[in-house]
Image (cartoon, rainbow, N blue to C red; front, side):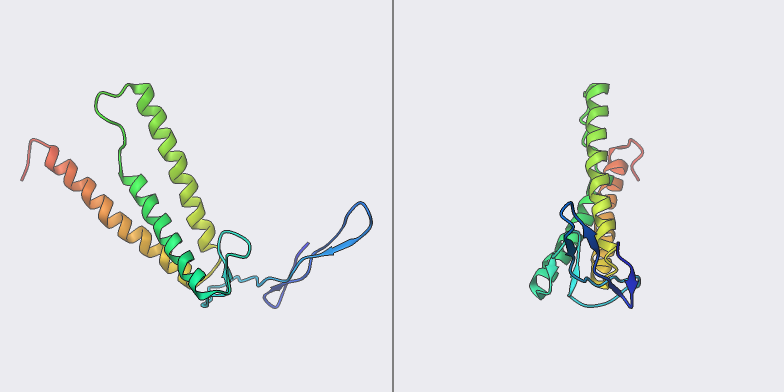
Length: 146
């Protein structure tokens, strides 16, 4: 069991069937936003302490957020599709979108300021690009064009 002591998780101990005690390494536990490249985002040990890998993780979170917005504002159902096909396709897209949105949320839970800004920028740019395109398509397809 871990507990928070001054921002660090204490080593967890557990007894296995042989009576041996196992210790886990200490990792920082942040409950407020912090700045820095030494963090864990989504997976243990990633990006680690490498600034280049941290930059890659920011690009990854940004891209995930853009994809979430794309899936939110895109309709993949083609005219003439059966109701069953349309329902299955919409359900599949919703499932993938939800999974990616939860991944972005979990990345932000790292409480790293850079990750938060990357997710926010990804959602903002994705919304702007794909929502604007969706609006233009719906306005352009109507018979009452202005």
